[in-house]
Image 1 (cartoon, rainbow, N blue to C red):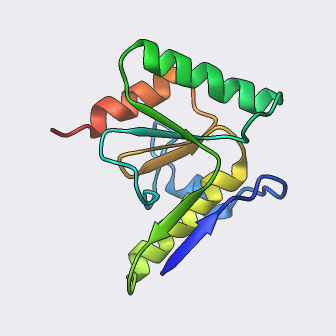
Image 2 (image 1 turned 30 degrees about the horizontal axis):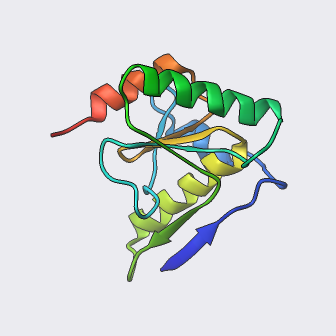
Length: 130
């Protein structure tokens, strides 16, 4: 299963996000292709003055300042051959997080729309390996 996603104009929350949310607000997701372990992916519209994009930029600055590796992007893709039912469900959750709005943040198999810096740091530290 290969695919890419870059769709900022039509966002709608998915019902299963609330059900899957962990206590910290993050949910288990399929990590987009090309994102190494222990790297935070922050997705937001590029070159945009919107409030969402400004929150993304502030989050990226704060994470960088405390030494957490961050990659900024505006789209994502998956490279899955013969995905299992669990992988398809995780991809659906990833897309649902993205559709909720920017910044969409993905860390070590977890994702959340518009988290606080402290939420990102907590999940980064709790899921970090190596």
